[in-house]
Structures are given as C-alpha cells and as structure tokens.
Length: 287
Image 1: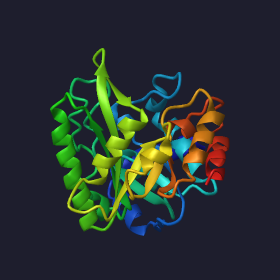
Image 2 (image 1 turned 60 degrees about the vertical axis):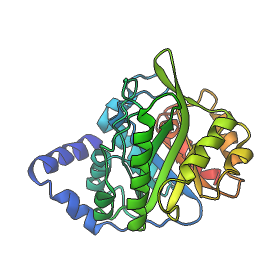
Image 3 (image 1 turned 30 degrees about the vertical axis):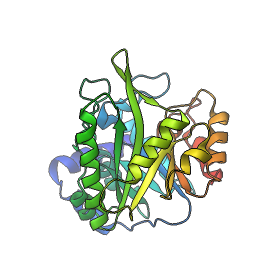
Image 4 (image 1 turned 90 degrees about the vertical axis):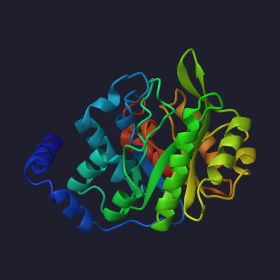
C-alpha cells in the first residue's frame, strides 16, 4: 500500500510540482500551546543516516516516510520537524493536516567533515517557512572555542532568529558546546557546558520573543534550565541502549517550568524493537 503512495509522490514531483504549494495552501495548521510532542526527521540532509546499530537506517526514504506517517497518526503527536524534501513528501501524503510544522534551516555542517562547524544555512529560510504557512524554523548551533568557524554560524543563527521573529514564527535553537576528539566533532553534555550553551543561545538576535530552545537531557537539568526563561523542548537524540532509562530522564526534565515538550527523531522512529507506534505512545504518555 505505501509503495503505491510513494509512486504517486514521484509522479507528482516529476509532472506536477506545483501540487506541493497547492497542498501547503490548503493545509489546516496546528497550534503551539500547552505541551508539544514533535517528531524530528531532518537528519538525512546533514548526512546523518545512522540510527542505533544501523548505519544507513534513514537512507531508505520510503521506510522513513512510512515511519513518520505512523508516528504522526498517533494520538498526542503535535507535529514534525524536517527539511523541505521530507516535509513536502509528507504534504503530498496528507500527513500534515492539523500539525505543527517546523522547517530545518542550517544543514551545511555535514557530519564528519572538516567544515562541520561552518554550519551554513542550506535549508529553509525564514521567507520560505512563512510562505509555506509553517510554524517555525530550527537551527543547530555548535560552539567550539577552538574553531573560528563557530562565529560565522553564530552570526547566521542570530540573523535567522531575527528573520523568524519578524514573521512571528518560532525560532528553535539547538545549542551545544563542542570540541574535536581525534578529528571528530563531539558535543559536551556536561551540566556546565550545557548551561553555557543555553545562556549563549538565549541571547541571539535583537529579540528573543519567539525563541525556543531544543536541549538534550543531561545531569542536573534543573541547573541547566535555570540559565534561561525561554521555553524549551527536550531533544530525543540517538536510539538509546536503555529506553526506559531515557524515558525516565525525559519525565523528570518535563517537570521543570521552562520545559514544554519533546522533539524526538531516531529514538522514536527507529526503536530497538522497531515498534514505532509503541515508542511514540510511550513518549506521549510522559506529557
């Protein structure tokens, strides 16, 4: 059945590409209020295809779309975060009706490249997000004190925050302090490092009125989240070895006053037992 849907997408893209904009104009939008449960699917555009023990899990677009449709159809799932190619496929599938949609903006920092920290804005612009009637834009900000490429990415993120705020849509900033180990970029998930990252991200741009944070669950989350008054969503991250322990960490962090929900991708779309619906339902129950 899903193979038929995929064939229809391919035909539409080849022969009637204007159908994408038409679908966006007809779409009933979701609303940002209360607790949010969003599914993330912007990893492939950065060349990050691994999920758990499967190095190319996210490379199969039909499989990814089917998993996304399963997740988005579950009760309590509010929306999705993705790049244009994925979101447009979901539009054509009719999977975004009544959903919150966040466009991923800077995907130029390809994984395991020498230019990974020079994270250019190669995805959505604020203009494109507003034109499609979407609800916000997400950007990744990794700060390496020893890499001068950090400052250009930081400046670009600040400009994106302002451009999104000018259109009164969410600017979702995902900050990390990062450094290289044996040439590979690694995020510092200590409480001190995340506290610093949150503080820096909160001050980007000429206004923070529409800025939300996207943060991982780390030790001493109460101290980390005390660094800002901005609303925050918890980052799901990689497929956990111990799902129960990961969910317990989310549940504890959700009690903090600024934490307003969860954005999870691989941990829900590619659970160890491959039961997407059950993983999503469990995450929703935490809210």
